[in-house]
Image 1 (cartoon, rainbow, N blue to C red):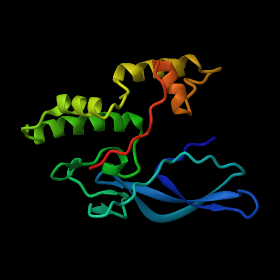
Image 2 (tube, one colour):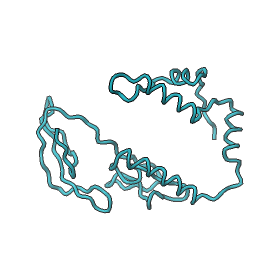
Image 3 (cartoon, rainbow, N blue to C red):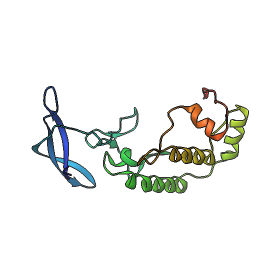
Image 4 (cartoon, rainbow, N blue to C red):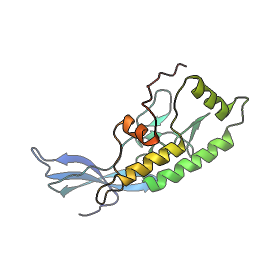
Length: 183
């Protein structure tokens, strides 16, 4: 296995099987990965895709197609609209860069948004109770997380639940009916 930096895949080569990958050399400009136009081929017989994803444009929100991210100023797009992670920077970075990025934007939102004459969390709790919705709390999530970790086999860090009912069994609740929230 070889790790190649400053390069991005352009095309998978081969007919009935993978013979290689056409790559383009890249450089970093203003924190973004930019193609140089210089191509090279990496011969291979196996290809494992794990390069992430490219954000999709949302109607009415400025999007930079070339960089694959929303147009933003340090995460701020417009009034009450922010971007984090790859939506902010384009498909670069890892969980290690995206998690602190989310915390940074959360702090910015707290600073930018002025308190309103609205009930906030108490209002949400009242709405949930009125609609008889069983919300999954942070403590509930911790129980689910612990159960997934405990169910891990071998060297795996966890065994993810694939069914809602299995998660709800862990937190001791009957199945929650899916409800449409009307605007």
